[in-house]
Image (cartoon, rainbow, N blue to C red; front, top):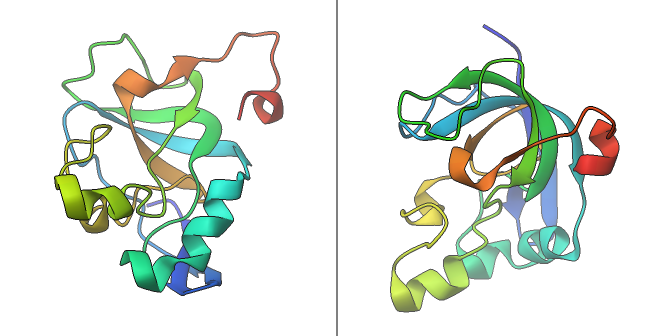
Length: 146
């Protein structure tokens, strides 16, 4: 099994790199991806800063990435295959928890993000919802596409 590390929130304002398991496909329409690059957005540090208040302690951080498909879920309909270079969003750091307390539903994943601690892009291996990802053109660098 491959080694995996992720940036996880450990308390408000504090995130650390920790050893974690490579996540299994949590739903049939998900992909397992080995990350190549990630983007750091203002939303990432804000979620870490508010982790205690938002109920996100223990969640993986990060919402944008580029990488290579390692495994394809049986329900993926978008035509992705192992080895594809892809990029897209992930719902890291309990991004929707502030809203979940009111609506109790996450539009992107269909589940409460507080229960999906492995949603986040700042890890060596991540799982992503296939419908939200795109292929990276051959003439675009991984770093530019994240």
